[in-house]
Structure formats: C-alpha cells, structure tokens
Image (cartoon, rainbow, N blue to C red; front, side, top):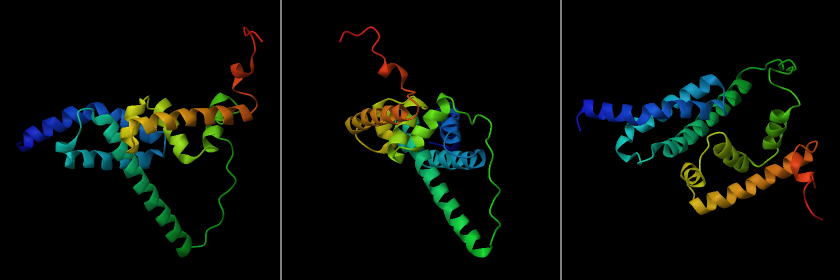
Length: 180
C-alpha cells in the first residue's frame, strides 16, 4: 500500500474513533494529559494500522488505557523528582469545585472511589463508554466470559457501596407491590 492509500485508510478508521477516545480519556484525567494520551494512542494506531481489527474502537480503548497508564507513571516520576529537587509550601486547602454537591453524581463518584480500581474501571467502560462485555474483554485483554462475570460482580459491589451512602439505592428497599 502506498503512502496516500495508507493515509486514507488511517483517516477512514480513526476519524470515527477520535471523539469516543477523547471522551474516554477526559473522564479519566486532566485535559492536557488527555490530549497527549490521545496523540500517543493515534500514533500507535498509525504504526499498527495493518493490525487494527474489524471493530477498532475497543482495541483503541485498550491502547489508550495503556498509554494513559504510561503517562500516569511518568507524571508520578516527575513529581518524585520535583519533591527531591525543591521543598515546596503545602498547597492551600482546596474548596469545593463546580459540580461538587451531595447529589446522586457525587454519591456514585464516592462509591466508585471506594471500590477496587479494577471494578471501577469495568463499570466506567460499561456505563460511560457503553461497551458490551465482549468489548470490555478486548479493552482489558481478558476473555468475554471473565469480563461478563467481573462486570456482574462489580455492579453488585456498586449497589452495596451506594446502599451504604444514605440509602441512595432507593427502590431496592421498597416493598411496594410485592407480596410477603
């Protein structure tokens, strides 16, 4: 395949993936890091263009996940070096930001924060990215059966976490319409 053909194929495959990948990354990191990781992900897609599967988005989510992990490791190393180089005053106490409230979104965020990292990621892929168990399996590099089982268990754990926080599980406590 010549360079022009390769470029056309890349643009055809990647153009519909850019926005979902950008949203995926924006939900997991700050905007600057999301842009950098998106660029890294697209570079991997370009380099491995011949290896892209028929449905490239779940595969690209997996690549983005790995690129984000690399970026986070790099950021941690940079922070450790900065801490060794200079002694900084502690940052001022952060006040509540926009959207920080006691509503359902805050309860879900708190529940996800209280869960295992792996469970929270499964739930985010399922709820935010709207991936099926088979697609989640491709992202995480596990079998579809394992993804389905883990997702089922993670959803149960999320229900338990939400039940702990002010009874936001709501309908599960109701006996309305049920026979005893």
